[in-house]
Length: 282
Image 1 (cartoon, rainbow, N blue to C red):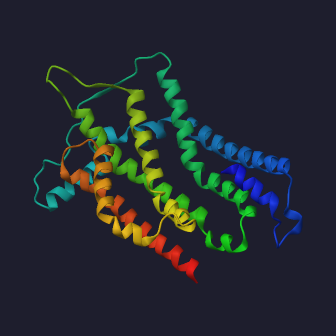
Image 2 (cartoon, rainbow, N blue to C red; image 1 turned 90 degrees about the vertical axis):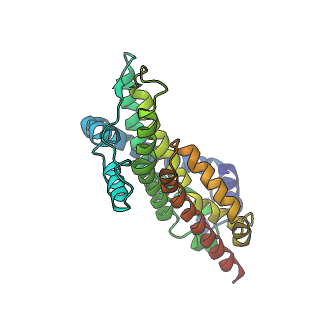
Image 3 (cartoon, rainbow, N blue to C red; image 1 turned 120 degrees about the vertical axis):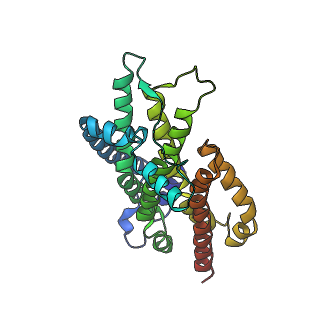
């Protein structure tokens, strides 16, 4: 994809700036500096998060292990409000975190700093990517892509928050308290715990980019709102399967907590596709 963008921008000149045409090596040099700036910002955030170890781990990553975590408290309030009893009120998460490898805590610390740096730097990385792609677009294409950096960043960060506050705590509570026998105690390694949280949040952030993906697929004619409306019921089934895979809990309430936002994303994507098709017909 990057090569096609480079060659496209080489073959055509910018009507507003005739001097904007660059050689192939010039585009590679431009791409290199975009990558250098993106990695530099990522590293700045990573170093800052590495320095604030206590806050990152105690207040953020290890917080879902605490029964007083925000999500657990709200779930309990909702259950009581709906007269479902206290079955959804989490009083204890019965597992202990351990570190079995000599370097596990340090390597986990490094990994967390990198992932956190990527999440924090994501808007800037998308902006740098847009700055590289923008010269290869026609004026009309630039107008249609206006606000793409904001919407892409906003959806990704919303997905990360959804993964952190909804998917991760439900997964941790279910898997952390699941026992095949009372004689088998759960002692979870730190790397496994952190990997679960980071994986869930990043995957959720990527899934929330669905409207952006639909936007571009609609632009090139692969998707249209008629197709998405026709196969809406199939999409619902896929969403339920995806929600069941993401959250390995067995209760319907948790499944709906994940499936409903994903369905809203699908309906939003239909609206986005309809908007693109309407603009192209004008």
